[in-house]
Length: 77
Image (cartoon, rainbow, N blue to C red):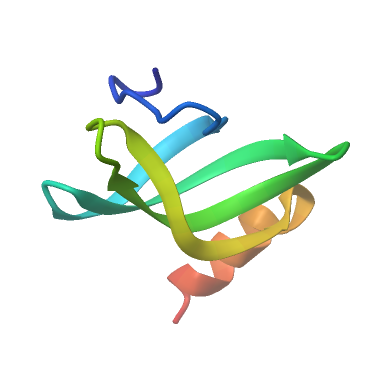
């Protein structure tokens, strides 16, 4: 459980932060995770699955080392 949120089985997310709540079942979040030995930074829609747990949806994944740069550039738009 991250930030008091129940995550769907298999949804591994470190430092999960909800940026925008769209409605009770959808939000935009950032998080990091590892996949095949590489660390990634995600900006992704998350949604409640049929069990009520939060699961990842469509979004963007980039190398984790570029996450702060991406957020800084988005903030300057």
